[in-house]
Image (cartoon, rainbow, N blue to C red; front, side, top):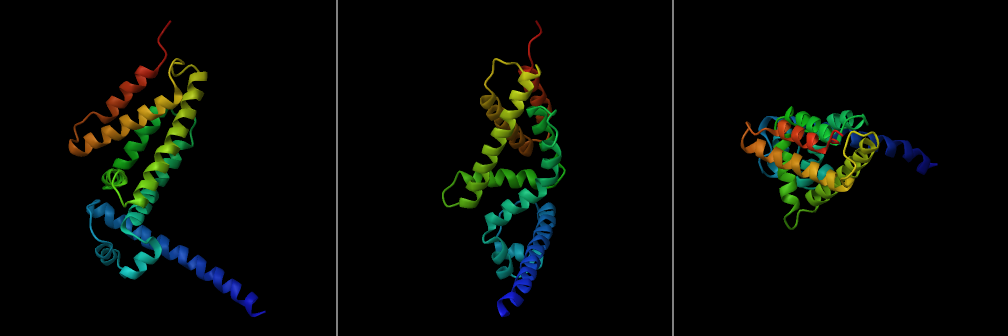
Length: 202
């Protein structure tokens, strides 16, 4: 009987914990939107978010885990909107994703910082994030390529996986150029890539 009485209380505590984590994450997103993705300590972020360092480490463990959570949560709405339509071409999907990211200050910088960290030693959270993201994107984009090849919208003499990898590389590289120079023709270059993938007229 005592064990049964504890279960609702435990479930209630779990739900409160999830809500508290989301509350901290929402506040952290506001902080990063205002200050960008400059590297700083978890303790300094805790002060800006308005929680103790212990609370922040309890829910996120490390600075990188927090940064991954901030990026994933910030880009979730735009990603689900773009990915829901199967009529969108792989290049259009990346153009819309880039456009959505640029609407959230600091999000592009945060993504670039995570990918850069993933290439270094002792950054397991960043590496896991980047590896999983690239694998997921390659799979999704390759599937779209095959669908559009069958529909005659993309030339059928190109490998779907190679196209997917190329589109991701072009999108990420152009984002980096845009970070350094806002006049870089990010969307125009991606549109050119899409034109190159279209079937040639008979």
